[in-house]
Image 1 (tube, rainbow, N blue to C red):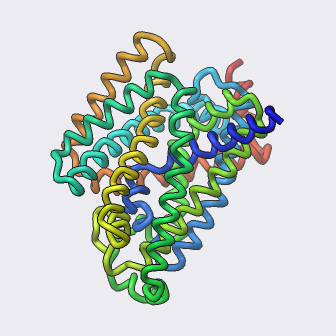
Image 2: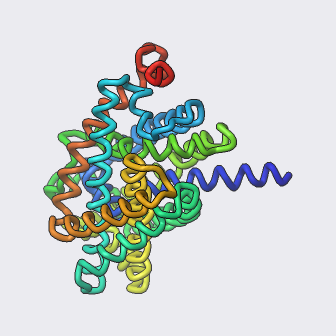
Image 3: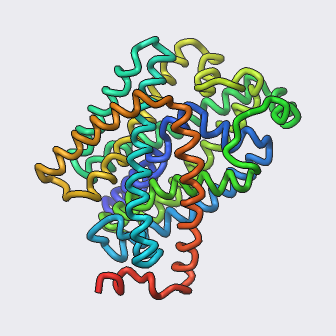
Length: 366
């Protein structure tokens, strides 16, 4: 019985880590949901179902590959799927993109506290950099423990917010599909299917090294796989419910930088304050593994160099993240890199289907 209880706990932690990694400033504020799903009306919900199916696949594939191969360099996951030449491209490209995403988190933290409390942007930006840097220095196991515990809470609260948005204005949902095309909402792509693919694409560049590391560290391959499955279910459900909640109140949230905060304020002013905390926690749970992924690519954990590099990159993140506008970073970085991620998805399918022997990680090491 003790073994069974421990397995269930690990599955929840792995699922929570999956969810928490994806709940960054874009999701928590509602901007990702608006651009990738709500802006397409009910077709955006179909897009969310496509996202669920793809997350289910890539999550289990990443943890399985990590558990099987125990990659010495976590970014060797790209060599495993793509071969040496293309894998090397993704290796370097993903590091740059992931660090740029960390910079987005810094900007998001500063913008969130500024909008809700009127604080200077450097308060949130520096605060996030300090917390993320300290957590990264503890190492991967500590990161998984911390964000894996927070992830389910964030998902539940986001779902609750979406449900409340629907219940408080149920008539708005029926009219949303006709209203949305007239509002000129910012879109991630020309159609809902491309938007769904782009969304999974940029998330994959976040998840690859992190989830393969979880698979490598997991005592049970099945626990890690079940964690990825439940993580995909939880996150996708949150996306759908929050999207429906925003659609129910589309006239209010259209054009807002933090649309989710409007839903929270509609419930009660105190809820808006609580949700600001939720957004901050969501940004933190994404920023930590992003920063870790970059640092561990350059140097080994638990070394003096690892600690120094973590500090240096956190400082650089603050300098850039507080100078470049937050909304511009989100739109440019996520959308463009999403299409690069779609190409990685194609390589993964070929590899897992057994159609590519040249990309085998063990052959590449030899």
